[in-house]
Every structure is written in structure tokens, then in C-alpha cells.
Length: 304
Image 1: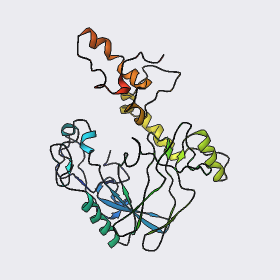
Image 2: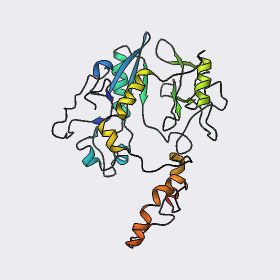
Image 3: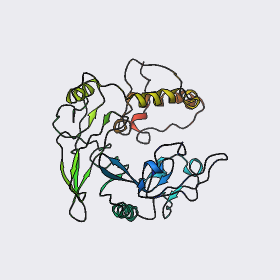
Image 4: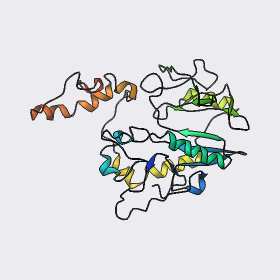
């Protein structure tokens, strides 16, 4: 998939030099760091830049410290891949990615790129298990949250770097429940001057989409034709056809939100936990009980 991609894979702290590929798989190509993203399509780079209007915006990627702990059996699924500098017995990087990221900042700045974004996986950056950010007051579609949702940190959350310059941290919720939206004005040196009041997540609900259409002076918002075409093509591939099939249906939404399934009992957890129990009991296999079993997986009949 990487070889055929029109975009690069960006990671400043991953080492691909020893990756072992299956027979027939295309070789991993290493691109030019701090170069144009479109010219590095299908390649691995530590950083690159895109042109937005008349401005060049740099992108630097960083894999999280727990990268090799959230991938099942990395020795078999991604053999040979490692952090730059290796990792310890707990699969944590032996070398901080900070200097590796700063090297790419310098490389981009040498090419005249002064507006730089660090793309990271900091899901637990702020309060709560998801760290979902939003402003407390909605302005049209921006920060208009789904019913029952709440957010503690501001969108964006402001920080100050070692030189006293403003750094903005943003994230969005999982499963495309929201689309992030940050509008920033920079000075000539790439320092942040202000944040537009229209910044904030947009909920992917009928209400959110309708409110966004009103802001754009449109009657409706239709899906992008190219995105819809790609999605339809993916659904028809043999891989998707073989991997997904209908096993049942429900009239009630199943709660698979990370903040819930990791902290309390949910109907999706019950549904996942209930089927194996009869087999376990019939074979007299040990069954974990609270507190060893996550709250979301405690036994109850599945929803009907």
C-alpha cells in the first residue's frame, strides 16, 4: 500500500533499515527529508512540506513511545522495524525523539519553511482518557458538540516553547465523530500571531453539517466526489469483501467509545464477552472476574 500511495509515510523516529519484507513485496523506498511531500509519494521520510496557497507548511511525524506495545506481535507483523536508537525490554525507545524532531525543524527552516506542524499520537495529552478538546461555547458549527459529549481542555490548548513562543496543541475525537478545524495567522518568521474565533471541532452530525453549510452559504454539503469514489472502490476489493460480513443486527447503538469501554461496563463489551463464556464454562476453563476483567467485559447477556 505504501508503494502505491500518492503521499509519504512521515516518521522522524522510526528506523526502516532492517525491515524484513515478504517475498514479492515492493521494497521500502526512503525519500528526501524536508523535501516536497508530493515528490515523496510512496516513500518514507522524516519530514516534508506542502504548499497551501502561497505558503509552504512543514510536516514532521513522530511515532508514540508505546508504538510497539499497541501493535499485536510486532516481531511478526512488522519484523525489523525499530525506533531510531533501538528500544528496551519494555519496547520503549532508548533515545528520545526530541532531538530527532528538532533536526527536522532545522532542515525545514534551512529550506525556507517556517510554518511547521508536528503530527503525533498524543491521545492522552489532556484530561480524560481521550483528551478531547473543544471550546466551552459553540459558534455556529464550531465547537457544537454531540448530545452528551463534553470536553475539558480548550481547542486549541496553548503552550510555550523553550524560546517563549506560542505552541498550539489540538486533537480530535476518534471514529471521525468530529473533524478538527484550526485557523491560525502567522507572522513572517512563522510565529503564531492569533487564532481565528471560528476554530474548533465540527461534529459529523446532521446538525453539525447543516450549520457548516449555513456558514459557507450553501444549501447542503455533499460528499467529495473523489473521496466517495475511493470509498466505493475500497468496499469492492476482495480484501474488504473477505474481511467483513454481517453476523447480526441491533436496533440499539452499541457503545464502543474508548473512554467508556476502558473504564466501565458497556453493551458492546457485554456482546463481545458473552459468546465465549459457555465454551469456557463447558471446558472448565478459568474465567477472570472483577477486578481482573475490564469493566466493559463483565458478563451479561448481549443486547437483544
